[in-house]
View (cartoon, chains in turn green, yellow):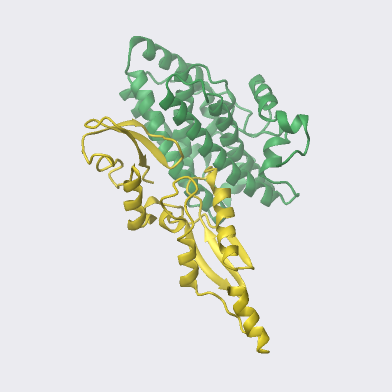
Length: 251
Length: 169
């Protein structure tokens, strides 16, 4: 049970860690100052949530590691994030589309985790869900603004959606780790979130005049560690550079 | 002073615990400013969730504002420095996540101080009530995010001044 919970917490923590790092790559590069600040703030919230999830993961594992060690001293095959979040940022539109696709899932999943039978999971979910609700308000607004914007922004958002959509399904694929925790009332069944998710994102896409792809084909392997894209390794080289160059460095 | 009081008790041959009252400690904590918005105290911010004596150890429960707020570590350091300065020797800071922090816990004194300082206090409506500079209600949101995790950027259409709004969560 603890082994499954450890894996599940790694998944949650790695999602926010990898996405948080990706979003932070925009710092100093966003199209306007306000968006730059917004992206950096979003990244900060995600890294904060990572500290909570990976902190609990380390506690559950009980092997003397902490959140920093889990984040900075694992290599690609140790990561359990969804493939969606490790994809490169692309243009601003694709970054915000990825953010929206993730935020929409976060608010639904965290809402269920708030009712977890494990109070440690429930309290982190309650904290993170407030931040996720704030994030989705902005990412949904931006998807609508750019989707229903100029011909150029519309085309870019539609292209971003089509590029990212085949990575969405992984959020709803369950495995033995999920099954054990679902049985214990710790986490929701991933598949049970799909209907609410599709209804929510479908509503936003309709307002954004974007066409939601019909295919349910999904790339997968990130959350169980079987397969990551070639992009994660490059990202980790940059994110973990300091610990790789100076192992054990601290301040 | 506190140490002197303890010493006086011991010198009379009787060790009496001279613990400062819980009310006194809340007052001391109300003197610790928020590191990023120094016009309000940590008590005004609503992040001190409990103060109690556990035997001879003072326990202070602190809740984070935003999970990634970089001020959290400084806040803990400031609490510790302030209370040690008042003679508290045994101190334990506890992180309390639940229930999660809400801006409803800001004190009225804190709200007034924010506005006086130029930061519009949070409202349930999700936006500032009036410009903290000129009082106009003709306002425009510039960004949902601002210079710190707890603020958003707004502008007044009358005096044209940009200002911070304390996000309502």
